[in-house]
Image (cartoon, rainbow, N blue to C red; front, side):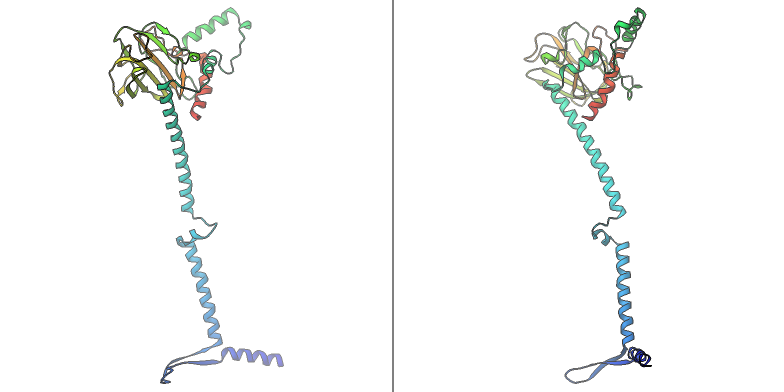
Length: 314
C-alpha cells in the first residue's frame, strides 16, 4: 500500500503543472508566462537529444564533414587516391624512359658507358640456353645450322614481343671497314672508309634529335628510331638535316668527311645503340650491300629475347 502510494505521488509530480513567469525587475510588470510540467521538460530534452543524434548522423553520412573524421575516407577520396597512384606510377615510368633516353644520348655523344663491354658480343656468339653440342652434330646438321644462320642474320629485334615487326636497317654507307667495333678500346662503332663528301644515309625511319658540330667528332647527326634504337653518324663534312627533321630509311642526312680532332681520314664513324647499350653494327647491317638488310640472325634471338626486357626495366 505504501509503495503504491509513493508511485502515485511520483506520477503526480510529473504531471503537476508549474507556471513560469517573466517579470520586469524594476517595475515588477509581468511580461509573459508559460506553464510546464516535469513530464514536458523531460520530453523536450529527449526530443532535443534525438534531434542532435539524427542531425549528426545525416551530417556525417551526406556531407563532406565526414572526411574530417579520423579513419573514415569517402569513396570519392579512395577513387582519387587510386587515380593519383596510377598517375604517379605512369609518371615514374615515363621519367625512367626519359632518363634512359637522356643517358643514351650522353653516352652516344661522349662514348662513356658502364656496360659490360664483352657481355653483348659474348652473348651474341653463344646466347642463353645455347648448348654447345657441335661434337654430336652430323655433317648434315652442321650444314643445316649454317644455312639457317645465313638465312636469319640481321634483325635488330628478334624477340617475342616484336616477332611481327619487320625492323630492318639500311646501310648508312657502302665501303670497306677501316676499324671494327672494339669495346675493349672504347671504340663503340665501325669506321667505314669513304670518298670525300660521299652520301651518308639514315639506317631507318626516325627523327633527328641532334645535328651539331663538336670539336672532337666534327659534324654529328643522331637519329632516334622506334624501340629505343639510336644511330650515330660522326666526322661528317656537312649536315643535310637539322634537329627535328623526320627522315626515311636510305635518305641522305650528311656527307662523309674528315672533321673533328678524333678523325684519322675520310670516313664515317657509325654507332648503333639500343636502350643505352652499344651494339656491333656488323651484326645487323651488311656494309657491302647497298640494299636494306633482310635477314635475321637466329642464334642471336635468345640473347635479345632475354636482354630487351631487361633493358626496358632499367
